[in-house]
Length: 367
Image 1 (tube, one colour):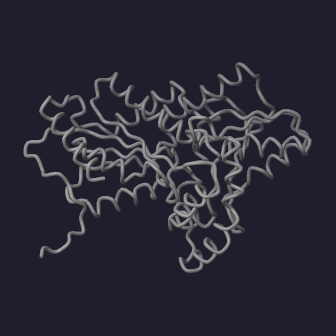
Image 2 (cartoon, rainbow, N blue to C red):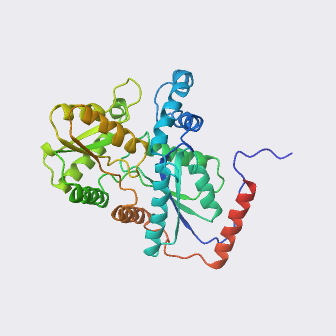
Image 3 (spheres, rainbow, N blue to C red):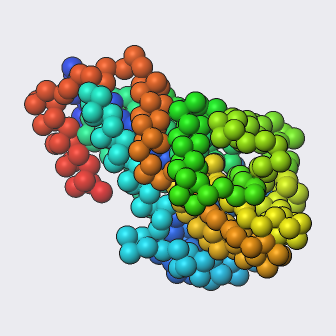
């Protein structure tokens, strides 16, 4: 009897296989539906990631399964329901659209690449999309996170998922990773142009608040660059907009638990602005490239209420980059830069395409 193999079965290797290039555009993930059951499944996977919660596993499992997963899913499901669209979760809708637009943008530049989107948690997993690219004949893959600022809690976790897939894969494609693009001039200009376009229509605020997703203060002390990269993004963005120090502020949102996180916190900042007599505040979330629960509910709804109930008069939420044409161009530029040296302009011949289709059908039949 043959010994079992730790590696997943794969179609037979084809000698002389023409190189094909893949790009996986990775975002965080989302529940499959705005229900308590779907949110519980999603949170169980998300909050079990040691990159996300750096608490001893035994203690954290008691908290997660004994408290959080018993109480939080129903509350979070109601929040998801408030932003859910007919096409599904806003994060999924925008990420899928960005990947399709990236595919088109690279194609218009004569780059013959396969672009897929993946989620770190939930459906459309990174492993499943790597399997799909391999089935289509991809021999080289670029991993492109949707996170401009690097953090171990997000970017490194994406890389962990890729490494985990590779650890059980026999023939691993050549891999490249984009760590960050927080200070990329094209990303900054896309942000600045998006904000300026909003102001051209709605006028300017008294204050611009740039709200980034928060992480525990401890991560900064342990060497995570996220805080510094967020500050640099904010500095470059306000310089591009020509703002003075009195015209903007930076904050961090989405705090979880009682530990100290990066400060200042967004909601207390909005309360303080309203109480201090700031009449109009505009909030933008530069670290989010797609609108999602954290921007549409936490900022556009809860943030609005915090500001207006504290004395503020006019609250504006400026949408994320989403399918902004300048952003898609910037994303294509970033991808193209990291694809340099790979034969992306070589179009697979008919035989290669037939073999890729046969592999894809074989993988589909096994799944």
